Amino acid sequence: MTTKCENCALRRKDTFESMSAEEIKFMERFKVGEMVVEAGTTILMEGSNSPQLFTVLHGMALRYKILLNGKRQVLNLIFPGDFLGLQAGIMGEMSHSVEATTKLTLCVFDRSEFWSFFKERPDRAFSLTWLAALDEHFMGEAVSTVGQRTAVQAVSWALVRVFLRAQGLGLVKNGAMRFPFVQQDLADALGLSLVHTNKTLASLRKRQLAHWSDGTLRVPDLEALSQVAMLEDMSPPKRPIM
Image (cartoon, rainbow, N blue to C red; front, side):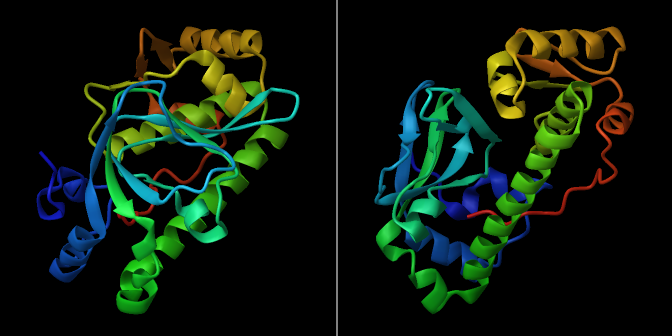
């Protein structure tokens, strides 16, 4: 059964901005349905021109790019509430791919109605602009991490960012969260070898700063891990949800 926007549990999460009744009504008109895909499914492919846009309702995914030499660069991890396909909606095609890591439920929007945001709902259009700016900010921080943080600092940075996202979504219970990715995903995101990533995680585990195994991530002391990551901002701003 399709979830109505007015009944969406994600809107009540701490990490998202509130929406007015008019905004909710508009989004219900924009939404054309829901789609469930299994883990390993490619949702958006590099070079494609998808007629649809998506908001992740349940599950997690990976955004990545394949280089000409066949190597993979993971751009970021996808969480519930993330909006997918904006790049194709504006630029005509995707420059990266999105693959489901777990079973995903996606809210589906008709891209042909995309420009109605700007014509009819400038508040919603601003939210789209905000999301684009957020992605730009994250990419800048990620590039700084790959280029200037040590392996221990970089892995710590990634785990802190993941944990903060999960906290805002209410996915952290007793200091632990479901983390269904593999070490290769983290290595491909940070430009590290799998061996180096494994040794770095072992070091953090030995220092009792983070423990990742069997699809579960535990962070006993988030503040201490943030200090290792050279992160000062522990209060990410509320983000719009489409």
